[in-house]
Image (cartoon, rainbow, N blue to C red; front, side, top):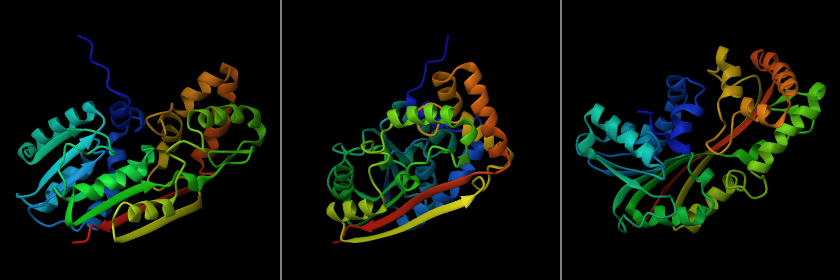
Length: 296
């Protein structure tokens, strides 16, 4: 019997977004998880709600820190990812400490007011159009004194590259081909309206305050640097070309094959590959860690 296809969120997190290196992807995300949990200031016996839990990276990490009395609620829009997390929980022997909710960040109505001690997210609001509603829901379900701890990439920081630059590489020799690929991504996720690009770190701070949090802290980190991100090493080209940048769009190789002739795709990818492998590119990336408290 053929295996049932997974939804786009599970397919990306478990395969399309990792370029076949799931272990490397988890290792890359582990410091993010640890910082989110440190900002959450967990105590024993608490209940943590992980919104957009994915495959449970943060939730299972929280259980290790909260002791036997700790409980987690994993919520996600993907039933496939919830099922995957349920299987992992059974393997880890923590199934009795986990609850699962299929619901978006903007509708946590299956949870009562003041019902959890901590809310966490990682790279979730970047897909949410009504971010104000999400913050309001986070605040509602938290108990007085409850904490919110989130991590979000700030995609708008990258801005729009000039015509002769693509993925931080000089593409003046293949500018016409690069423009066709860039145009596809811009159509798929317009920079002036898509939830991924319509906010920055100041918006997160403002939305948390407007959502009812009276104590809010935000750490913004931005990098403009020559070369590939740390840890990419020899896998840099596979990560950049074969991994889909997010669940809603294809990989670079897939877009090149779709938008260009076979000769054009070969020419563009052949131009980019040695530049990426040699680290001859400038990367621009930014992220925000926000922590907040619901006052008594």
